[in-house]
Length: 471
Image (cartoon, rainbow, N blue to C red; front, side):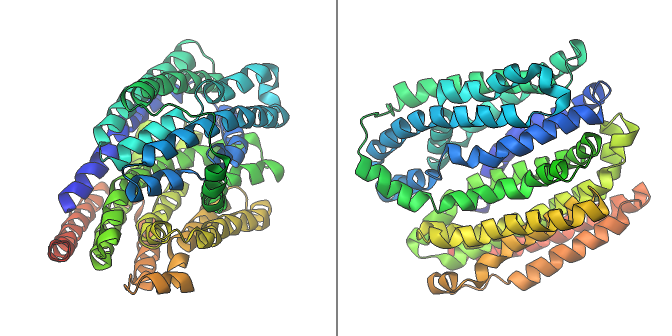
């Protein structure tokens, strides 16, 4: 089981990380051609467009997942109807998105507003939910190579296009938008053929409204749950914009968040890998085995994020060839350590989703998002853009651990996940690594070796228990 967890996480996570690493090595090239304003324009647009991104799928992924596991002989009928409904809905969504972009484009990009609108909504209008549905099928079927191969190919394509447009053609922030559009179109094309012709999952446009309404009744409570992702990851830049913080300072914060995106990708990958395993344990009534799987992942996350934060200064010095932007490494440490919420978040919420207790999830996730927004509104005008890193950490800790304290979770699970212990360890390691960030390299090497050795021993012990529980 441990081998499967880490191998699938590696495939889901390391495949895109191969291109992430390549992307990092391209930073010395593109950061010489970009300014804080370029990062600021991209950050502001991302903040606002992400504000409604959750509505593109309406939370219906939960219906895809549950029908796949609970109705293995009939799920295709359900998927085809959802495909048809979402294809039509995405056209409406695309025009809403286009209108929003037109209204909020920063002054620095106003001359190219119509082109920016088209580059953002084009793939949505042309392909709708194609890539999301097909990648969900591959993930649930535990065929990670189908997703990983595309991640590598299109990741390198994105890097090449970024270098071409930003470095060679000197297009600034427009280089990112053109690259995203081209990769989005090609990526959707790669999923369109297998979904429609190999898997025969063609859209049914004459869908049954009764089925759609039933699905939406379960999925719509998930919209606030998924919306928390925006509130946690992008709303801070929107609050900065509304608060009058300069586009340049927003750009500085956006640079610090690039390393957080690396950690977020690892979290997403581990979720894709661990999700089917947890559902299998829940189906078999092996909740204790599921908790041990969560503990293994938590230890791995704490180790990886600690080491990444420990070497953050060196990474920024090498990769960011812009002295002003490279100094933002200290914010990256706090943001990266915040992502340690992820394994414990899986521990509570995977069980809630499996039992379809979705009316509780939004309280946790939306609550975390609102905490982030409210704290940003209060603190950013006083302490500046740096405060957003602290508010992000606080909000993620709430999201990772609040689910364990709801009455409904205690009704569906009698397993102790030791939330107080894990959050205490996370906070202690965050404080420690923040003060260790400027140590001599030799001391950092010794700390790294000790950290890997200790975590390896702990994971070995948890895995031994897991093997016994999963039989």
